[in-house]
Length: 212
Image (cartoon, rainbow, N blue to C red):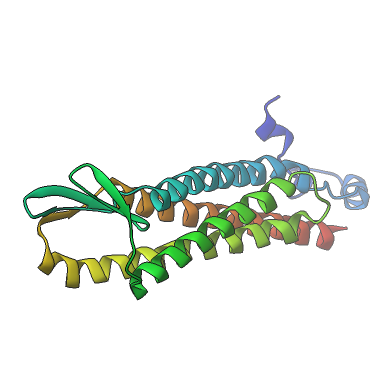
């Protein structure tokens, strides 16, 4: 017998049942739907954690590396990140304090911390008795992490297009910047997976309580 057959819940008495059989059927306990829903919830949470871990790695790499933007400066191919700029193969720390850099750095670092917290919460849902609460908290935390990174990347995009594009020739966004956007997509997807798992879990618990 397959798992799907094991998890099929009776919705009524067999056809052609006698009156005594009907009365007997009504006295039978209603099967608990929660064990059948656990594989679905675990799959959703597992997919969410996979997206969250991948997103965290990409956000860290994007924030730490120096290839957010490539351009030519005095004929030399140059590139820069949030912390350093490199010209002619030599890299230097940004010494000028610019508000948009500070804002982008802050949002990216907060996003990384939030994503890490969301992963920890997601891992504890598999062994915690407060599964519903922690699943919801993990989903919300991961969504916040994705939105923080989205804000940081949006600020960087707006300033780069409107300011640096006019200052430098032959410029383009580079792979660190692209990894940041992929990290945003994965982190938000992780939050959505956990919210779906929470919705599935809470609906199953509600039906189990109603049938008890």
